Length: 271
Image (cartoon, rainbow, N blue to C red; front, side):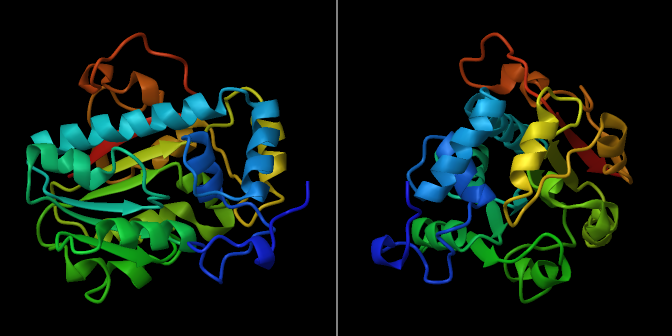
């Protein structure tokens, strides 16, 4: 199949989007059953599924973990959320889940994909308790300041920072621990860090990493001990660092048997 080009560009696609290269956010959208992806993303997603057939299941389980984590945080009294690498809007966004427990919860969404940002802004137009920023996790100063997330969030009070399936797109050369140290320095005690990270211990990880080298966001999956170190300065809440599907499954609506999900997830509280 020929890749989509300017002649077939959907009206909702920003002109800055390269339709000839797959995007991690749009591939993830495809796995979740969304419609805001292009032919190049769908072709890439199918290649990924040839190596890892459970990729859509993994995406759904990660989304389910997001819901459980946000419910837990809301129960701890957290009313401010910073979702970095938030992706393309779908059912069960952070603000929807958080407001089930706290109607006034404030949420800042950050992503570097123009499609994700465009659709998030369209979805949340008129919502004064949300803010959508186009920025990159690798440059925390660009979204943490008074003219970024500080426009909506009060960093003198606890904030939950959500980094779901995004840190494994940050190579060691970009110093993920240093990035997290910059974020941690802005947070008040009692804040939380939520991470989901793909692991090299998963089956077929090498083949999938090879595929992602063809994209603007190659994968840097890590072993469990390296993922654990990303929580430096935070105290993990039970059950600790586990498979996303094994993190407090009872918090999911209609929870059933826990499937295997490669990678690890955890929630840490700033001491």
